[in-house]
Amino acid sequence: MTFRFRSSNFAESRAEQPFWPTLLRFFPYLWARRGRVVAALLCLAGAKLATVGLPLALKVIIDDLAPSGQVLLLPIGLLLLYGLLRFAAALFTELREILFARVTQESIRRLALEVFRHLHALSLRFHLERQTGGISRDIERGAHAIGTLINYTLYSILPTLVEIVLVLAILIVRYDPVFALITFASLVVYIVFTLTVSNWRIQIRRRVNETDSAANAHAIDSLMNYETVKYFNNEDYEARRYDQHLRQWAEAATQSQVSLSFLNLGQQAIIVAGVTLIMWQAAKGVTEGVMSVGDLVLVNAFMMQLYMPLNFLGVVYREIRQSLADIERMFALLHARQEIVDDPGAIPLERRPQEIHFDDAHFAYDAKRPILRGVEFRIPAGHTVAVVGASGAGKSTLARLLFRFYDVTAGSIRFDGRDIRGFAQSSLRAAIGIVPQDTVLFNDTLFYNIQYGNPGASREEVLLAARAAQLDAFVARLPEGYETRVGERGLKLSGGEKQRVAIARALLKNPALLIFDEATSALDSRTEQAIQSQLEAVAQGRTTLVIAHRLSTIMNADEILVMEEGRIVERGKHSELLAKNGAYAQMWALQKTEDKEWESGAGNQ
Ligand SMILES: Nc1ncnc2c1ncn2[C@@H]1O[C@H](COP(=O)(O)OP(=O)(O)OP(=O)(O)O)[C@@H](O)[C@H]1O
Ligand SMILES: [Mg+2]
Image (cartoon, rainbow, N blue to C red; front, side):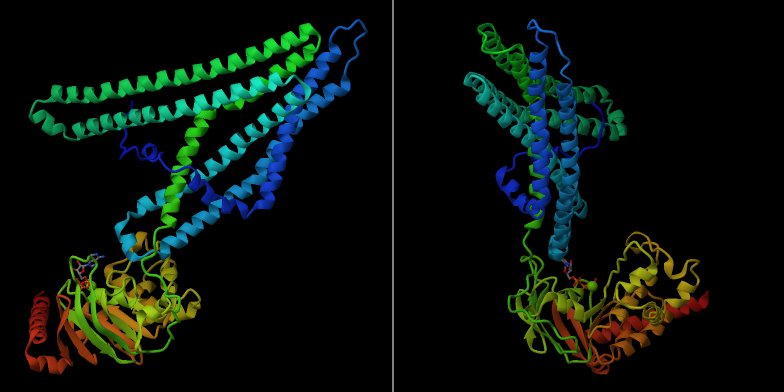
């Protein structure tokens, strides 16, 4: 009983999973390597033949040495054969392991890769709703379970089965059928007994774990509330409650031990009964003169050899069930439905500036809360449209819909008149470049992160993009320059630096359609102005959607849309909107005074 933080006994409670369906789904992965599997199985057979040959050789040796009146000769050949058989068994076993190692690792590799690809294919919604930690644990466990499953079935169960068949065959062919009968019957009883008791024990083991966790949880909770316990002088009360849990745990743990002893004793009783019966029959055979002493040793050796691996049957059974449950979870990930799938008739989106049309688009992340309520606007090919509005109005949602992370719930989004759902997703995403509102970087170098926009780009192109994004002055000050590592999620960079990396990589992607979602919000005014002209130059000739808070950055847009609660409430050019004296004009006035205050404040310092 130790203190451990443990969330739950997930592992045990998952043991209730369908057995065969999982196993069957797993076999295609083995089948892909059938050549090696067959070779490994041949080695397995070889090893087992050698093992079964051992008692046979032993019998001949003993019979040779049995006093029969003549001078005893050393059966050198037989002794050598005996040694050879022992070595052959080991050799074939190792060969099998070598042959199979690749199969196991390859299956794990292929499956893990498939799951990984699939996870990237799943929708944003899936990933927002799941804990990444939980998913990676499922993959890890699943991959590990495959190894366990292969190990136990192929290295433990299958060899034992092969051996049983061989031994039974020899017994039937060479001796009275009653030997085979006794062996077979006692094996069946043994296996049924073991599996039954093991199943029953799984419940007990689970209770041990549950009570253990409960006791732990209580102890930790109580200790973390140390002060409160003291304030109310409740040490005894806490101890009594802890003891309640401990009592339950002790009860369950005792039961577990008793049941284990019962299992062990029962197994031994069955073995002893079988062996005694066999020996009795053999001894009778010897006294009747139909069997030799060597035969007696042989049948005894066979029985012992058979039962040895079966000792672990209970453990093997439990492990296999656990592995199947883990694999099942991994497959469940694999079978998670893709929310956004390509139409069978989907065509690639051409990489040229096109007209984007939000045609009365409605959207909700959650059916109970509409986010977009009939958004209608067009960005003519090669033009720039800006969206402004309060936080939460649904601006970034427009960008997510353009990338087709989600589908509109009503209305449509059209590229040159064709519905977005008619294009292949990968071509769609290849055609659009975005500087997202929050930039997250890979835990790698600056260079890597910029080049990510186009992994095929040359070093010169990367540096050019970095310069356009005003990164070069900053990088020049870094001791390691572009080889500087940016830390987990890019946390070693300031917000403005991350944003410039995002701009550089969007430029490097050189897309026909551009989205800037608050692309310069984290920059100081001077850097913003420097980048602004670059961005406007880049936007020339591309269909561009700009989302911005600072209105001075979008003054030159061909059209400005003001969004409020999922609707466009005003639209027009900067000057028109100012003339209207509506929401936009208000925002503009507000920002003007803020800027003035900021300037005069800065001037005072
Ligand atoms: N995955 C999601 N699930 C549920 N609701 C979401 C999800 N993503 C965003 N929302 C909600 O949708 C609304 C619009 O979000 P959106 O990101 O489009 O706002 P925004 O206009 O870009 O705001 P901001 O100016 O703050 O960036 C918000 O109220 C937000 O809470
Ligand atoms: Mg946003």
